[in-house]
Image (tube, rainbow, N blue to C red; front, side, top):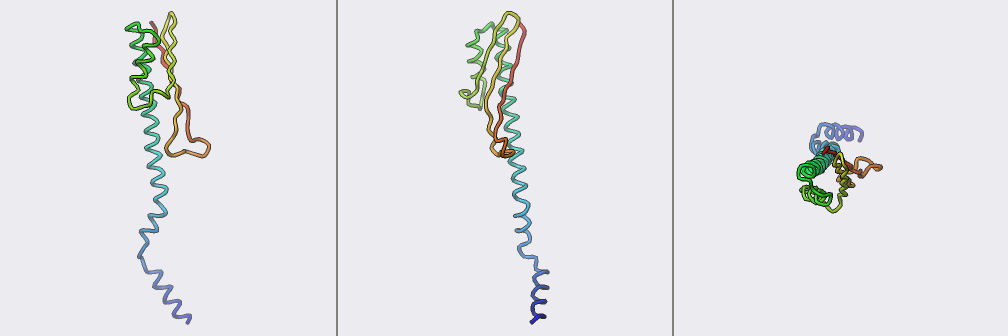
Length: 130
């Protein structure tokens, strides 16, 4: 009886069927978590760059073309290609020396970095002298 159990254990130890599936099950959550995290950080950086480009373009056009604050706001919101311009707050401040354009929005990550950080606020500002 004991000898038969040892033979079965010996055969089971040498059996390699299913090892790849077990290894994949152990590594897959880490791999896909990293992959989604990389995509999410890329999306965040793209959003930052898109908003920064839009407010830079608005400030530049506002100074060069002497646009009103409403026209600058419309230009910035029109330049937010790929983003929902309705949820982005644009603030244009026009004084005697410079034109300042600021934009702010809430950003929600697809894959929460932690329980405490599922989203963040993006707040960008640019200023151009007249």
